[in-house]
Length: 376
Image: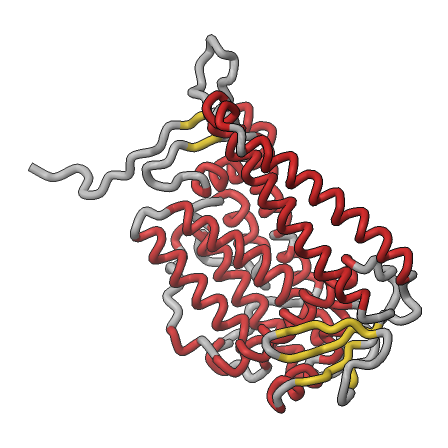
């Protein structure tokens, strides 16, 4: 006779947010149909897949479903592509991309496709979902779309046309990779994101099989440096309460020739995403600038005249003291053997997480305060 199934995946037990088994008598049952009505089938499917690690019970909570529903909202990037005329160009071959940003996203897309494929083959559905979430939210929406805006609004017709075609290709690949997890929104977008009606449904489209050659080490190094500079710069802006409308200059102090060239080539992108002023080089860190260590390079963000340094020092000292007090109280509780023995496991873990968070926040703010001390 025929073997009906050659591979079987055993689903984990679905528990409530506190880890208790669901039962009608406890009143903690979550009706999937009600969740679908409230959050949508795709959001619930993505949540269950993301929490479906092998040999691990699933703790289901509505905030998780809400969070994964936001991923569907993030796919409004399709609207961005539509508004900027990013449609599949006839005969477009990603391998021919010349612009650095497009060579970078091509490699990132290929890497994500391989990771998702391998995870699905291994029934590591949670890994597939995590990879999709990171790539769609962080790589494509947060970085590629933002970096593409100056190009699409610029005067370089060749770069603009290539970026439009690449954005459309990446979006199509995303829809294919996401379809097994979120079939409804992806099928809908598949029908609406083409320049003309498609001949087939997304469910019948071929699965992406992208070569390793799509990775471009030079483009990856350049864009990774820009991302690191913008990320660190944003962190400093937030920590020092630099006003949103201020445009501090970004200064290159120490960097390799390749890093200087990469930062200079992407000056407009950095200015746009970091809300920075001019990018310039100086032999040393000028007065009123805080140092940023980015991929081995030393940069500076000029905040002189933009913040009240004495007031910020007082604020940071108070915040550090508050985190230190919180950490001490939590550590004392965790040192209590009676608490560890009697408290539910999830409460103990919550306190451990709280302690780690307080310690990390204290260390981070002490670093910020040390930066301010260098400004006088």
